[in-house]
Image (cartoon, rainbow, N blue to C red; front, side, top):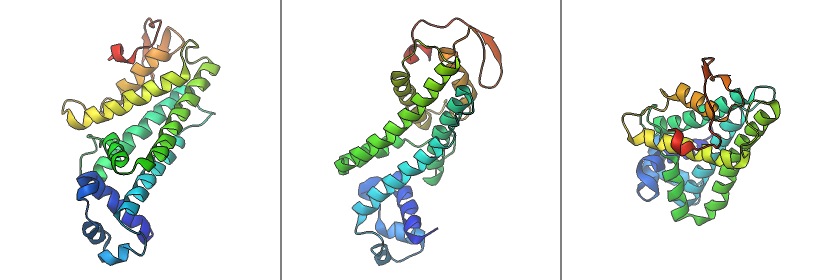
Length: 224
């Protein structure tokens, strides 16, 4: 890994742990194994490192989320893989910051801090969420076309609901000791699929056959 990338990874860890204000270039340099002045060979100042860190972080997530999608796979499988990617990247951020894999880091908090100090990052964050929503919408439309997912659902609106619910659950898992999102994965997939699957006789993501009546409209708020 190049020194510039090592600086960015060390910076991400420090920004996760201490926030923008308290993150120290000296600490970042020590973690990389270089002298503080050496940082300025790669970055103009802490602002430049922070902006590069956010872009690096979002690019890493985008790559991980986009890879699982395969039009040759079922919508059910692609949806499961999408959720896996989101959950795992949040858990990996927690590990990077010195936390626990079962207690995902609150990425939203970091992005909110980003906008507080750097309003110019709004466009980059919009691109990030546009991409996530677009991938989800593509999976949902694929499922409707194949007959897996109910046609009376709005893929665009549902993709935003799913993102909000999934990230909210990651945030809650980080502060509520009774929730482990990694432990809840199976139920997570099955519950979501129950709500959008076309047939009354269905199987969950992991093959457990079940029978249920579907609501006329989707309401993530009342399901859980």
